[in-house]
Amino acid sequence: GQNIDQPTEMTATEGAIVQINCTYQTSGFNGLFWYQQHAGEAPTFLSYNVLDGLEEKGRFSSFLSRSKGYSYLLLKELQMKDSASYLCAVMDSNYQLIWGAGTKLIIKP
Amino acid sequence: GAVVSQHPSRVICKSGTSVKIECRSLDFQATTMFWYRQFPKKSLMLMATSNEGSKATYEQGVEKDKFLINHASLTLSTLTVTSAHPEDSSFYICSAPGGGDTEAFFGQGTRLTVV
Image (cartoon, rainbow over all chains, first blue to last red; front, side, top):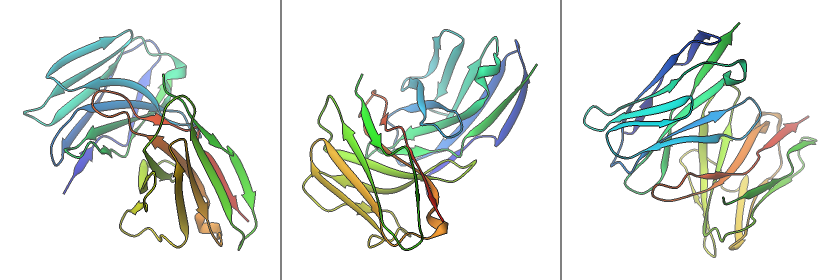
């Protein structure tokens, strides 16, 4: 079956760095997405990786290793507004998004 | 970027009534729309995939007679929760696929509360 695993919850300190991991097993692979979702709101797009390596975008970076079925989202210089759920999603061979359960990130002052 | 407009954002209805949720693609044609349900602190659960001009494809365990999906045009897909019950209370969200390296485009979501 298809499976996306990510930690349920993480806690970090304002100004610090946090890495949220995602491992996946899917039928085919057409890219991995990271989304941020604040409670009661729609997810917002953060990043897309289809090739191995690191993609940097401001304070956020995303890494992919296709051979290991592994990705992480790296958040630097954490701000209180970064408190949210972070969803990992993989696009399978049918171009359908398979969603992880999300990681709730709690930022403490 | 592409915009999907979802309406209403919040709705409270009585048990036994029906509620319609609309999703419109404002600046592009959406031949496919995904409908998700999300419980508190949970990820998105795909309910069904609507395709313009044809019947929706429902995921296992989703009652198609209860969650009626219509995709009558390339810019409008609707989800009707029929004979709603309190257990149907949830956050419903639609999204149009971006395809390939393009992000999915989400509606704003609808918070349904059945009392």
